[in-house]
Image 1 (cartoon, rainbow, N blue to C red):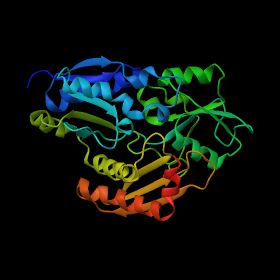
Image 2: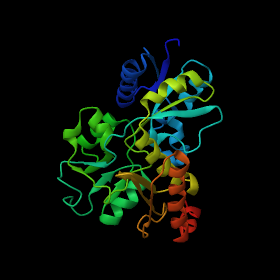
Image 3: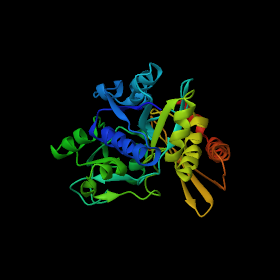
Image 4: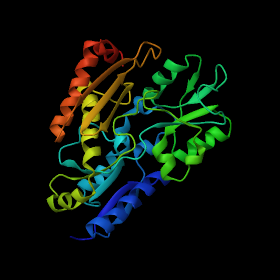
Amino acid sequence: MDRPVIATRESRLALWQAEHVRALLRERCALDAQLLGMTTRGDQILDRALSKVGGKGLFVKELEAALAERRADLAVHSLKDVPMDLPDGFALAAVLEREDPRDAFVSPHASLAALPAGACVGTSSLRRVVQLLAQRPDLRIEPLRGNLDTRLRKLDEGHYDAIVLAAAGLTRLGLGARIAQRFEVAQMLPAAGQGALAIEVRSADAPLRAALAALNHAPTWLAAHAERAVSRALGGSCSVPLAAFASWHGDTLALSALLGHADEPTRPLLRAQAQGRPRDSDAASALGEQAAASLREQGAAAYLADA
């Protein structure tokens, strides 16, 4: 196999993730890859929420174009940024073992509970907005865009009293000390796939897909299928405050899902659970569909219609 090319965004975190995959390819697959850094449309739009301009798919389209044009052989993504349905001709070849899936509270204040009344919290995630307001309806939530370093700088400049970020990104860049509080999953249910890295390839590239199987972490792969099936069943996107997280307890996979209302974020949150012992991705996806069905029984259609 020729030296493969990894397409990656050029943010500091994305480059760390690509270098991490590059090292694993060398270690486990005896492949010496090279990087192709790219700026995506999602990186360029900093003044509007992703839900208003096309969603998280804006972070992957240019990388998929590089794959289609054979300028690259694989692309490394944060799994939570990957649309639930890939375009024809593409496939996920591997999902790496998940890092900490939790959300992180970053602030001079010790915790969410310690924030003063009416404090300003930065996040552009509707999923985080509805869960923050469920705990602290007094908060003022303001949009927050940009790469991780930009978001931290805005906090340090005093634009916000606190911001909420994925703990995994901070940990990967050695910034774990910036975390004042790690939300427990019961407090702040993560996005589907949060904390996991995914490798996308051309679906017809059988030799590379076979090689990348050595990087796939089966427990994370199955958990991610269950989580992503919730979003797929409900048409989840950046415009829907939807969360899904699956964790293993022995050989049982326990899935939790949550849906909020985009236009009325203080409306009651809908919650669902499902569990089983999936042995393959189809069985894991069935758990996600079960949780989505439970949310629909609780009135999800009305929440989604207004999104």
